[in-house]
Image (cartoon, rainbow, N blue to C red; front, side, top):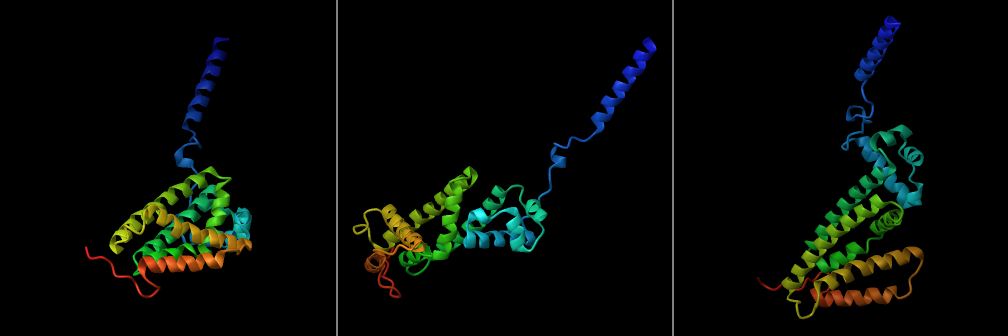
Length: 230
């Protein structure tokens, strides 16, 4: 009997040692590999995702549809993006960087107020932005990312327009650069969103009024107002 117990004990010890040598698949060493962000295939997937969102809306962006659109195997979608949220976040960041660059270019132009109005009136940008807003209603991670980017976007606008008001000597005309920012960036976007729904009432008059107002602030298009000397 003691001999049997000894053999049984040795078996248990051997099992413990073998299990201790087995790698833990939950460890970081065995986490699923993710494709490089600089990969051309990853960029191709993001371009295909953007086309799908623009053409059919965010709900159309599934791993199967995306792979078909990009002409790739479905497994590659999950190789480059662990989840669909990761894909949407990458797509938003890619889109946001382009928009921030275009905004910076508008604000550094010879007539930044006109340029910012035109930038905010871009229907191509607004269509994708609208889809992301709809997606953010259902995905907390997307909503948080949009809010963070929006803060960066608005901070850049506020700083630039405060300086523009000072440069043009508009302190007595423009009571609040913050309100000016909201008018120049939000009104044209609303007009675009309504137009995409087929709503046009009041649009033409609003745009004519905005054009006259912008001309009073920094001169007619193509004829920039003289900036105040520092």
